[in-house]
Length: 557
Image (cartoon, rainbow, N blue to C red; front, side):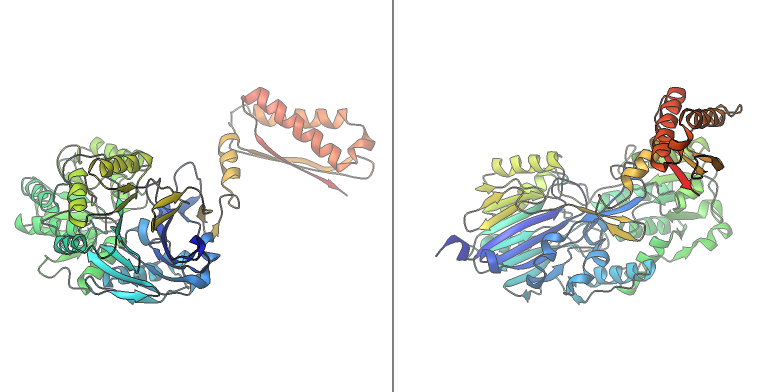
């Protein structure tokens, strides 16, 4: 059989491989020209100061759109933003089902309601241990421990080979609010040698030796810190970490304190967890309206804002702008989280504001108050030993993470270790091989309410404005070249001095241009526009040391 007519199982990362965030992957099965596709995850990453005005970034699904008739479904491993945050932006146009657990489904519905999104998707509920079929693929969700409820790896089975797509996972024998990783099922996968197995695996902590600490250890440390605090205790953490919220609430109850929640996302997610029975036995959690009625030494506040978001609860508290909640000198503030890369400055600024007010600030640098939900090297080794993969493809990481994971896999004797990046076409079976850059990939920006490519966005112009400010000049001339209105000008983003020397410079420069250009030439709007533009830019550059953005309007009347 010709190679282009044989069945192949291929993996195409569209986002999340070579970067942290924006996870989106496609699996194809069949001959090259008639392949059927499933998609795993559809996440976002977040804009940073280099992308002014851009809040969310997501993978460009152009490759899938070109094959839309052969795209069968989207399967979500869990409901962290970097894995499901783009579903409602990108998936409705495919009009194909989304498979998700009850918690992830509820999170998706809450996101749609909270953001006022009109488009919807057809969600089908999946449950661990209950395989379902989508075209030529049989898919089974496998419970894994992570920092959000109902996280799953996926066993994807085809006639010629299987894939274990781990999603985000770790080995935690004592998780809180969720079941531990299903080790027995992973061992069963390794015992099945009927078809070869490819492991598509989380690389986030592949550079860290040992095993990840347990969520129970964090809970014990938080309990000790809450118990010996003399006054109020506030804790900020990821709102989606339901297990951590339960640990904090239990610690508060043990110390004889009441729990108060502040932040919309905390209320939304704990509400979902409560509806699904995940908070049974957990202490009562009050709204922030109870805060002022509780004694200072009888309260634990759980609040949003662990990533330095300026409008979140802890940022407003730190600035003294929260309408209900305040912290005083001697109170304790615990950051039970880590700063996602790019957010460090904002988080540190909030911590410094709190420290300046005499508040006892505790972070992961001081004690074990946070653990991530990703495997370290010893956990990866244990997974290899259980599932016995024929192929390893490290994913979910930047280049350094991926390379460390690849080296570890080779050192542990895995036969085929494939280094991949976004846009590669990786043939898993038969004859594992990577074709770098085979698929056109890229990013989409959510710019306000508009979804656009980087080229279509206004980011380049905003960057220019942020460095050079803007000068707008308007002048009207008649057919004889005489000025009949103006010149008027507006200056934005340039230094303003008391002597108004810049205004005088502009007036002098414009006047000089008008005198230097003969009246007949002044009636040519293009000539006058060009002369004014060049003169203003050059003169302001000589005055300021930077070339401003200049817009000139010459009106012919």
